Image (cartoon, rainbow, N blue to C red; front, side, top):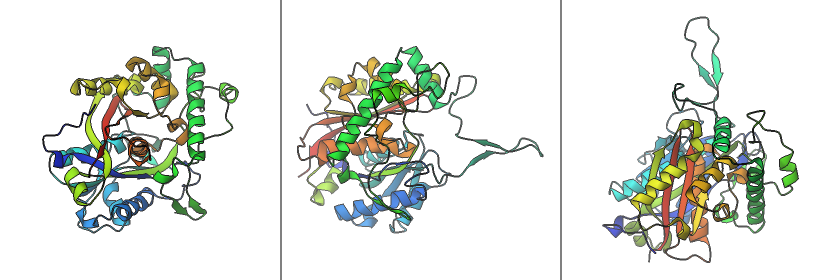
Length: 399
């Protein structure tokens, strides 16, 4: 069943190219590569693949969460050698930033504000500047801090791991289920990597130590016994461990979003059409279940959509606890999501992760030799501060 109704089909937004860097563990393989230098090679790859004239790009929208501020969209565009006439903008919805950038690009196309956008996200935790709070009075010692404030203290603004523990307790997600889900993520990611399923979407990155062309974090030797032996990280009596949570990572991901009419004029034969999206807020103390609210909102907007009928679902695996709690509430089987592994295995480069979800959908629904027009995909992500973001896509034939 198709959900791709548009009042003007020529202005339907379509993802026609999608690439990412390998995902590196923070301070390891990509530790010397700045955010703009992670994004720039992807921009060049997309232009080379599609043959699009660089000055035809209306804007470059790039999400970032942990960086030093400024306009990473513009910085990456100029670093990639795009014409100076092509602008850029930074997007910050924290770990939903990459997906939000793609949604914004699609909405701009729908509004006929432009026909061609580069959109996605990047994170270089390794090169991000330290954050220092200005002393309130002269002579006080500056305080280093790890992240911005997401919610007023009067409501609660827990660290991500503590929030995951809150979700595990509130929704009765056992340690065993979390570890089993984490093991599944690693096994699926390792199998997919060995089959070469990630390589078509990866743009290799040159470093002083050589080319990085594969993801660093999937562990082929992990086991349920090894995971069970890990101690809780955030609460002494908790269930969230380093094994059933994502690592901290560097990486970038960008897609090319253009109008269907422009794609046809360039002879592009197939793509991933953007259908709709929804964002919604939840209690910041239970921020991991944000995708429950955003998906419910999307279902209200798309009454013909059935979650059981969606062909591929990519759900960001920040913590196994929050993924399982959200899936339980949405009545989605864990086996139905992230069929080639997720962020627990691959990694979670905050600003890029939402765009990686879309690229994974693109690879499975469009890039695959067995692609099927009208196949649908959902990207879901929970975000600091208690926000969920869900986007619906459909594989389409353009020619």
